[in-house]
Length: 280
Image (cartoon, rainbow, N blue to C red; front, side, top):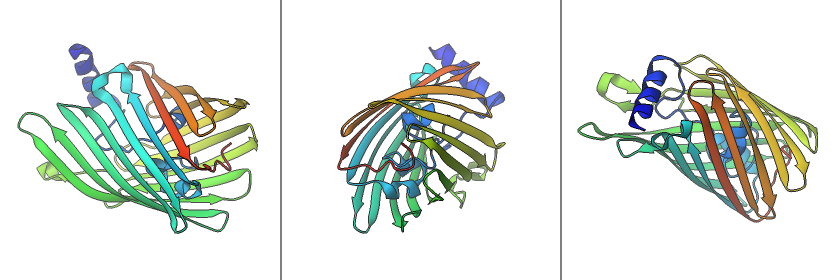
């Protein structure tokens, strides 16, 4: 296991930008199955993916998410989130932990979203970020924010945009290390009540652009199947979701031709009616 971990770190360091410090990857296995697309999906994971989409949630919803990157527990990610809808808007809280005892990253976000009419919504999140390295390296932390917009052009087409860390917060005094800003733009086109397609592009200011895409098919009443792809690096993904009243279970896995599979699972429980308009 130790040799495998060293190989993965070296491969990532010298070959491809699979992950970087506080990369702000989408959360939730539904997004994972859809190639990492998430900007227009309205569920509890909107609190970390695009806070503007959170504005369409109803009632209270809570979720947990686990990712085992490349089947290596030292690269695992654990997330818990909750959204609460009020007459003044929707509030959200998320806690994200990546890594293990020798190296880990933590993100805590407090979000707010509000809709304006039936088509436009806006979301904002304040973030606390920390990075801890064992031995004598210690812990560094920073505060930043992220902002998103979602616009439903019509019943079939929605467009979302999101910016993470536009101020490029400094995480360490060593070499003036800053967390990069990440810009995302995407759309959803709904062909029918059973099928939609997501297309997104993402630009980390320190990396090449990433193109993502995914398709969801509502096969039968409680079951959804999904496939997706993303570039830089090339990843293929697949998964499914099962929904029973207030409980929803999602599974996904992506595949990298050198590093292998990354399985994901997530669970959502809703205390009230969760609005999925435009997505299902």
